[in-house]
Length: 432
Image (cartoon, rainbow, N blue to C red):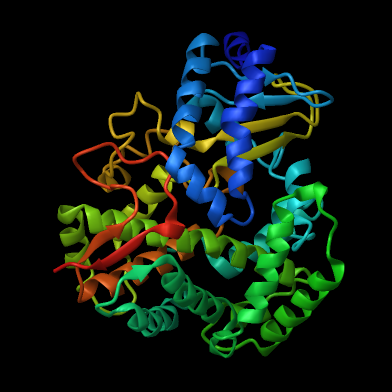
């Protein structure tokens, strides 16, 4: 790094007032909504008050005031830096796992409730093998997983329960989504094992509190035992069958994380459907693409999913922890990337509108701060599988139906989209 670059990345120090505003307007609303498991009541409040809008405005002012340099927050006993430029987002995410490790004190405390040996919070010695195992099973970089055909069949069968003239709400969609997830990950014999995912939900609710909530070790062992039984069955046509071909003692912890991630994928899928329901031109384009049968790389629908995650990131805070001294501070420095700020930066011409084509025409690739699935060596390894399941589900729902919005905030091409979207209280209906 040149001395000029070093100066540009050397942090400025926030005032006490600036630190308090970041805490109140950025951190607290995000934590209140539930980082590991969303809280519907808190999300309803966040949606009504549009908490992300003032957070984006605040960070824009801080960026302008501090020339885009990292901002060191005045946190007692900690070194916490706030990234304020796209260049810094790119550099930090590219620097995983050293010197910018995905394993932070907050993540270890939270994820330790249900996946203490997960790759995301693994130490440097264990991480490479666990990451390699995860990539071998999830197959990132392949638009169509080797099991795309049975997965597409599972999507079609589950989506059939949603193709009706009734109003479609989150609770109805979520039941069907979890049936699909259990089939994809563990096999059809796990389709109706709601106990498994209920146990995981309780552990994730505890994880929202990180180190402030005691660990329920007995519940975690019950969950792990139940999950292991499904994995041992290694049902053909499921990820469990691929896992069986690998030698990884911590597979249950990695699978627990995949189940956790698929929850966010369901939210993104339902939000995408709501966007399409309220944007007729894009819905017709998606319906045309949905006419294909069998497993397919549905490029436009995938772009729609990516755009929904840009508009409402399922991971609003990306954290990294330095493993050595850097220009950001000493080893152990926490770096915070607040994705809604970068995804909704008012300087972006498409900031508050639904524009899936930016993921197809190269504009998104030119902006290193658009990170719907993170970026760099620690990028989400399940990104392609998630996009396949989400886009295939949308294709099945749109093939024979048009949707329109029945309730919730106005999602219109004629006005800026809301900064915060509460998916729990959205309702859609077949278009007349």
